[in-house]
Length: 165
Image 1 (tube, rainbow, N blue to C red):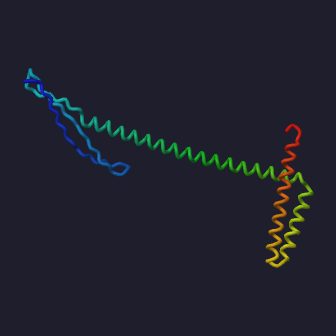
Image 2: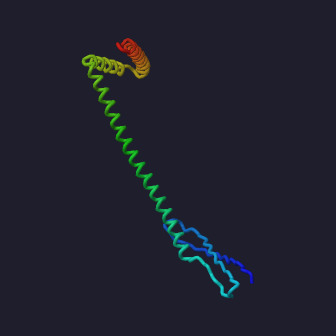
């Protein structure tokens, strides 16, 4: 008799219960049956079913643990980044407020005079009827905007005329 290979294939559906939603897994095992010409004995070379399942289970578990590790690293990185951003934001606000306060203090008595004039003007406007207040406030706002434009022009000129610029 000539050597003849026959392959029997069977399917087995296994349902696993894990921390994830249940999934159906199909396991296919193969068994090779050969006949030898010297004897009529059947030799079976079948891979161990338990070994295959064990390797498959270990591979899935390793994949899940790697996935969990990546997720936890991502969450930790996000938390650290958000914390650093909050710290930097707080520092920049503090620095801005400190420099603003220092610049205002350099003006000294002039600032006090400006504040007094502004408060007096607002008090006088409040004494008028509401229709008149609206007109006066619009005009006062335009005046302040023009003064800001003058200040900006003066700053630009000072920067250009500054020695070493």
